Image (cartoon, rainbow, N blue to C red; front, side, top):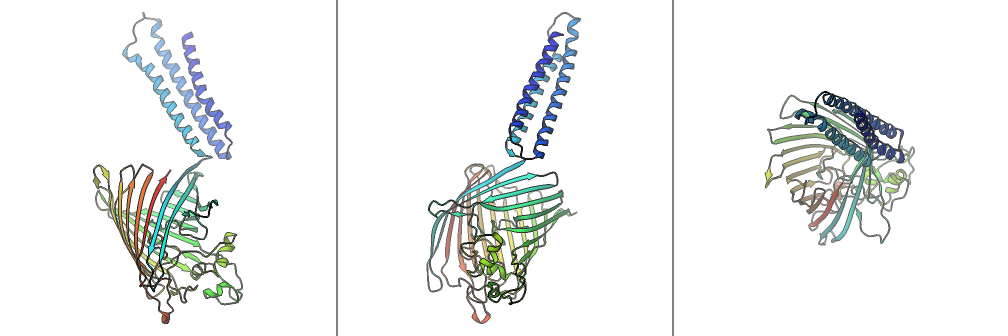
Length: 509
């Protein structure tokens, strides 16, 4: 019986040794919130209950094993008795692994926040010969981008997300920071911040600063660094068909400006954007409803179809923010400090050269998109998914030069060392098709609309988290000025071809 007490005491000491360091570590760290403290207490209570249960089980097992030894001659343990000795190391190992996992989870989070991010180091080369239509372009530069994400599940229905990123404040289509500025430190700002409410897997409501609701990183509608302030809603439901087995409804409402001008003065910059003195200047907004349908075409093929429409309100304020006289009135009063220059990204037609009024009276952009994917292709043991993506849009708010199209073919993906990816794109974006200030500024070099572009991409996996990416762009302008129609573009057709190369190392964690 003394041996039994000794073993029981020994297991109590082991349990105490496992639990006390966790408790001490939790007490030494400064609690972020009451919720974090309660989570720590709940974890410790769970561990204590599990340890107590195991001690009782071992105590009962030892009693059962010791009883025959008092009535029979000492003999070697039968094979069945080995279960007693096997329980202890198995239970101990499982418990140690469980404690280790939970401690790792606590160590990798700060008050319940999960951290992630990426770093991209880029070489950017642009070149164009000058002629009578447009001057030369020769820009060779280095750039980098750092993004840090923090996510926290507030409970089962609410999630908070924030992203901090590098990038110049007056360029909303990039988070890249250029080398230069002597040794001056670079800015770090809030790129994303939102609350997501998801009471079920089929419904999500989001508010804050976030990626556009139909963003797909295809370089067609949106630049991949553009973020909007407002609200989003998504709801999905199953469909009976296998070809299209799920439909998702999406909608978004974004606030683009807040002029706060109840009575417009005759000297205000808003007059140059078509507003009349004496009237109230209302907000610029974007409303974006649509739907997405997905399905299977067999064991290897999947498909996705999208239909949506962008509805802009008071869109001339967007163009006004890209003029020297207009950006202080549109931007500076909202951000709380004075930008060094107007918002970049050009390409749309205006009624006067460099003016603040779009040639298109409205921007109501309807889009159709279709993607088909084969995920079952392997090459030398590596998965090489193939997809073809087709997109087309039309600005139904005007009657001419209003279309945009893009065709994309992709083969391969990057997941580990040695993986490769090939991509080809062809795009046309007419000057009245989409808003130049929000669409991709890599596919469009210097101009983001009034262009036709061929793009080729090759990626190579260097490690699981590191890629070498190479992108080539060949760009030509499409339209010339037409003063009779009050149609003026920043760079006209006839300019020499623009060439661009982006070579970059991208690391994520």
